[in-house]
Length: 199
Image (cartoon, rainbow, N blue to C red; front, top):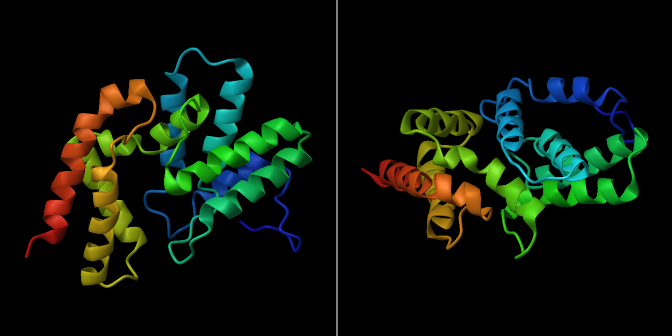
């Protein structure tokens, strides 16, 4: 899986993406994560055909580039999505919205009234509200993706990230996701933080 010399994505975007999500270093940010996100989108009602299509593309592309050693994964993924969708004849407005939604998954902060943004972020974070055994598998997969990081450094950094989520007034900006997942997510986060910070 690669881009060409100019950074362009091959025309067969889905095939390219499937290859990207199959990269050996990935343990959580895989095709299974994308399929889970798309399944959650399927359960959302009240979207127009255009909104659903934009969210679908954003979810497919949001982890197209995933390298634990770099800090610009979301930006590069958004840029690649824009190139691919432009090559496929997508409208400028739709391409811009897909790119915006992908970039929201970097900080997971959404402005009031941004329903598509709220859905994008909530779907991406929905694993946090999974059953304890599913969450434990997710946490283990994230650790495997950061296998290059020494244990003490990982524990400190991971706990810091999780505290940011736990201390947020709003974890899932979409009300339906919040109602369904917030309490479980906070229990999962607290449990992992406790495990990371125990002697």
